Image 1: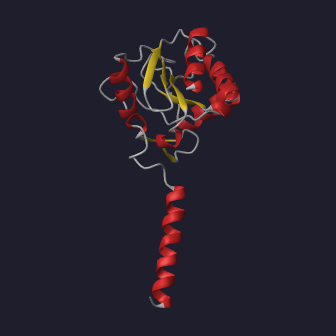
Image 2 (image 1 turned 90 degrees about the horizontal axis):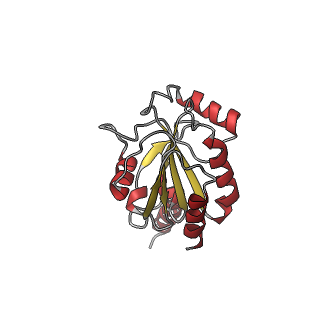
Image 3 (image 1 turned 45 degrees about the horizontal axis):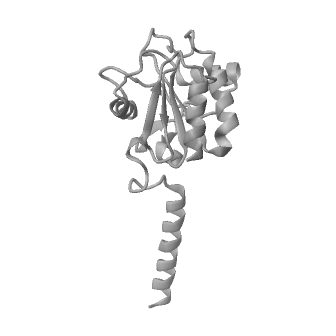
Length: 188
């Protein structure tokens, strides 16, 4: 093999390794339910949900002007308490219920951070019910047989991508049953 070909092969190998390290997990290893991309709320940067494979995920549709909005505080507390054990809270702002999330991505991001100190991953506003439901929520609905009824409806996904259960908006992040389900999923 010529020196040029060796250098080319080395460069291609190095590029492939570097590219693989930067790419999201392949669809072969990522659970089907996580094989979706959404723009991050703060800066619209595309985010592949496969980056959360192997974690327990609590997925929540959110709204800034809802009676349940104060749940942001409890969701952030859950995330802070359990993130080192593998929990991620994924927030999906939606204007589907009562038009209680009318803001732009920047307005929503500023409100969540400045009012509740939200640091868990949040995504750009999308529909979580009806004809325009985003594909991730369509899978959550299909897996549980239940559609979000209002803002702050929750779905729990285990480390293997199995959708375990759905929780009503009235189920607070401090709810003993929800916390027990999260702790059980984290222990498995």
